[in-house]
Image 1 (cartoon, helix red, strand yellow):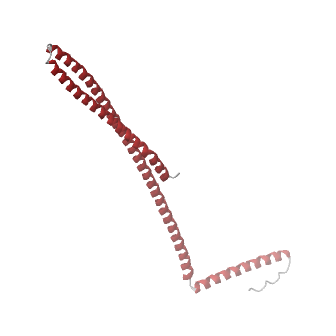
Image 2: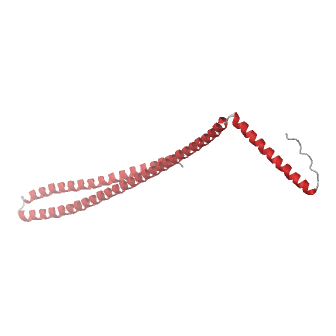
Length: 208
């Protein structure tokens, strides 16, 4: 599986997951807001009810005792709602803090992933640059070697072509003289050997 296909598969898996996670977070936030709205609505309803009960108390003989009883129930009921609201808001703050921490972790992971990708790209570019430098150096060496070989061949060719006919004739003469000297030396050695052995020397064949 190539990298492009793998990335597409991961995206196909990750998108529904993050979508579901986002829906879950939104639902939880809605739950908090719904509960807080319910508490506020309950408090408003109870306040209206207690106001009605207080109004009834003013029509009774024991007004004070009636008001005290209504207000005691009101304090108890409102205290219960307040505790519920405090606990709910604390849970909401903890949830938001957890979400913030999760976002920071995700961002940190994304930053590390981006940094790793940047490091891999930089390493690939550095490797490519090294290979290009080696190729350029190798090409220069081959070119220099070829140029040196061409110069050497040109020098040899120039040296050979620059020799005059007189030089070549002189070389041929020197070669012939060396051949004659070698032949004479062989004849002398042969004559000396025959004289020592008492055998008459045979004449040498004529020079070519």
